[in-house]
Length: 348
Image (cartoon, rainbow, N blue to C red; front, side, top):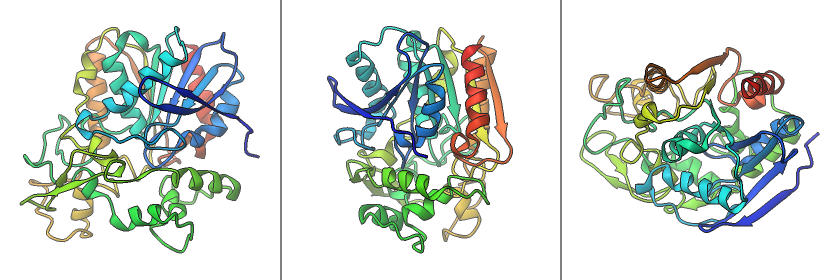
């Protein structure tokens, strides 16, 4: 059964935010930040359980769900959302340090928030997070870029058929680019989602705003494979290494405790990611791939571990917890185990 959690809305100094809120405000506060092509509804099941012990707030990010659809300046990188969250918490008169959980792109967003506001974070939980060096276009654990154009990253690297299916709000599962079809890639092979939940998630995916100022964003041509480079507007470009580099996270002070959760069968954020242009080229799906030396698969998990190890070397602490039989959405695939692990981490 889908939990009946009423939506709320608040006008901040930056935009009007739609959010979900449950639990006792006198208890520890958890802020849940969703990922790309999703919304806060992907946390509905978790909120129901977590709110028994915590005060839980889950906003829709700019460009997603029912939050006000204002343009996204990609040159700000993930700070466009970090600053939105700061303004959102100010509007709610939040004075306590929240525990932040960020999933996928949201993991990068909460890392950016910790860089920008290190004194305002009680803990961080990163669930299959965006690499600290963005999405595609880098070649080693230190995030060395493949070329000066940042080719193969940003809005132009997103599958155009998927974008069109989102724009047309196609729900036909026989279309391989429809939201229901793509939703399956969020989970480990063999996982069967309940039809009622599928409808909730697909509907929320289709609430995402489409266009150059939103998803996937604009792009430019370049002279090196795959001959497309990031533009300066929209969601996809915020995750290009041209605009996002979270390596300074390793030096933040103070250093909140970190829980890194990932699904071992994640096809969206991994060292062999099925959305990464380098890996797709290596597999032969994108013609003209120039080879491993020039454009290798993006080592996303390796890069996250590298930055978290640096964080630990500098006095911080982190735990890596792996769900061997889950994919990109362990909070949905393994809700009981996920909630239990997260609760125990918050409780210390």
